[in-house]
Amino acid sequence: MSTTQRAAMQIALKTGLLKVCTNHWVYVQTLNTDAREHAFRLGNYLISRFARSVKCFKGNRKLMTETIVKCCDKAPVFCPKCAGEGHSQ
Image (tube, rainbow, N blue to C red; front, side):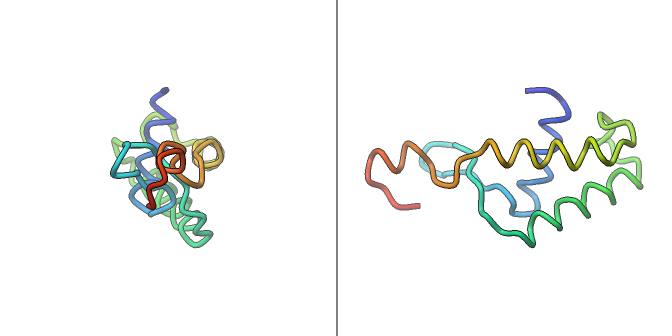
């Protein structure tokens, strides 16, 4: 995972766009459209403040939003391991 992907995942986790399955430590989507907008706003805020956590984007806001979208779109909606074992989330 690249540094930009790691930074995007951290933003997504902080804003509730992604969550972690506590049984299997798998990232899953929350499908919260408000969280997606919040993630973009937080990322833009951090870039404006030259935060260390988003230095890897080098001020490129478009790259930041595209990376958040890509990371979240790749994540499953439900934990595949829980679904296979019959657990609920």
